[in-house]
Image (tube, rainbow, N blue to C red; front, side):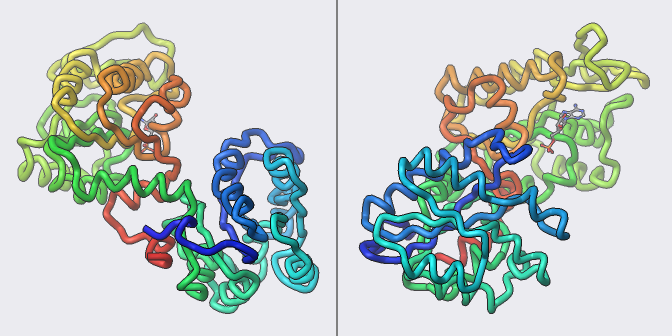
Length: 392
Ligand code: AMP
């Protein structure tokens, strides 16, 4: 993997594609985690005497009304504080003002240009990877660094167009390097390799199951999606979540890989989709037509723990219950804690399971919590990701 460390940065104009897609309310940044996360790559470029030109998307820009709320200006202010130096904000994505600002830079100076998606107002140029835009942005710099993992599964001008025009001098930043290193446990997983899957719909995870079922020694399935598998096995799942269109897929997978798939043996049930009923668990054989399962039960937790005890590497995507409800996040939290206490090498595969681990204060204690939602999922599906291919 080519990283920023492999390129000559001294006196160079270095374009760094960051992920500054942070929540901003009334001009104030609500959560600066992503900005803080970007600092090591930026600081490295500055320490190596580069002229640093930062770019990022922020939200979606479909119409004029989206411009002001997706203005990157507040990010420049926060960056200045974190880098302890001036970060000049240029309210443009092209043109004389931007070009002059870049041409007048000294080594060790930093510019942040306006939201790359402002270009989407004009024929979706950024999001459709308009060739002219990619070539233009590439012409502004000597070196290109991509450190925005969250958009790596998209082919946009700022992450594919630019490196296509700077083939020899493009590389990844430290954030992407860390993500790809962690996710590469998939390439040659230490065995036994196990996958924990949860979340709502089977349909969303078909690609992941198809890709991982051949590599994994076990797939432990919880969450709403377990019920379609349980229904395929012939159990009465009552009013639990059913993804009827995926029933045949589940039957197929169970027929081919029955030795690998581990399903819940008991669940926490309610009569209504709410957090208000008294907590109760039932064996999966005993659900009535009126009941629905909102979490795995304690026997299933033990079953999953006993399997994971043997694992040398694990990937986990999706919560095992409705973790938004206090009562039904319990077993997701307990399994996370088990993994941490037993030092099981686990990659949390983005999205809701990372949110659950964050709330449980366990995110920083697992081997790796991947930050990309869609990007991580596509990686787990075994797809080639355009942002990676463009730099490879
Ligand atoms: P996903 O985005 O596919 O990972 O799904 C996450 C969602 O799955 C969360 O919003 C959970 O509330 C939901 N979920 C997990 N378990 C269940 C369940 N047993 N019944 C309904 N929804 C569930």
